[in-house]
Amino acid sequence: MARYTEAVCKLCRREGTKLFLKGDRCYSEKCAMNRRAYAPGQHGQGRKKTSEYGLQLRAKQMTKRFYGVLEKQFKGYYELGTKMQGKAGDNLLILLETRLDNIAYRCGWANSRAEARQLVVHGHFTVNGKKVDIPSYLVKPGDVVAIKENSKSNTKFKAVLENNASRPRPNWIDVDDGTSQAKISAFPTREEIDLEVDETLIVELYSK
Image 1: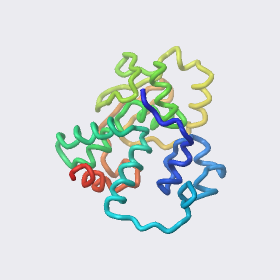
Image 2 (image 1 turned 30 degrees about the horizontal axis):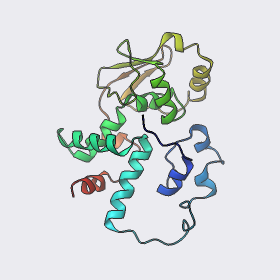
Image 3 (image 1 turned 180 degrees about the horizontal axis):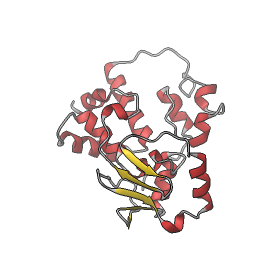
Image 4 (image 1 turned 60 degrees about the vertical axis):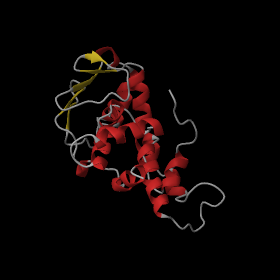
């Protein structure tokens, strides 16, 4: 399973915005964007002229990095989104939002999407009562995602749940903290997705 293994703070600096890739650190003064809010590298603070292609590429890269998806899989989501009803850009973001690892993160069951991905792979979650260990599994309205019973007593999980108890949850996910279950009430709308990206730029890039 391919994944990015280098310093993730560089990704936020390259995109010029917080992508919340390191959990608590992103909310603290230690966040790299608070200390060095410019692109990494020798020419990071230089003035840059951005072409139309450059804007499209940055929009795609930001979205990929936000959700922790690599190119082949990301393009697959785009192609699937073009076959669905509605706008291709909106559909792309909806598909990314309904990945199981993102759902676990949105529910506050992990400090970051990378951690959520790892927890899914280790089999800590169920969907409609059945264990699912595929981070890219797409949930749909009516599905119930839950932390496995024998995982609830895990010291790591207890600390994460306590730490994220006050994190806002999306309106389209109904989380029951008492049972550690979450029901997907609807697909998210574009307005409910907090990624500040112009998804039409991604569509333009792939449409060439």
